[in-house]
Length: 64
Image (tube, rainbow, N blue to C red; front, side):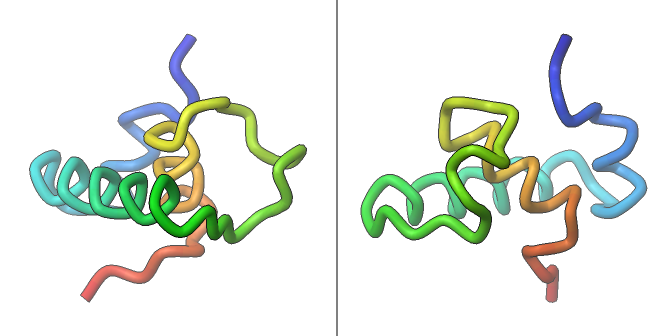
């Protein structure tokens, strides 16, 4: 099962396209800078894209 659920994420972000854009930019930042907003063992996902979506769900990324 995919975590976090797309339904939960769309309650936070109003558009699928905006969600993809935010997650892709954040995952690229994670790859280049190795900066994570949570501890490594707190993430459910192992890959950066899933981790970026988890950060969106937990409110760690603000959307302007």
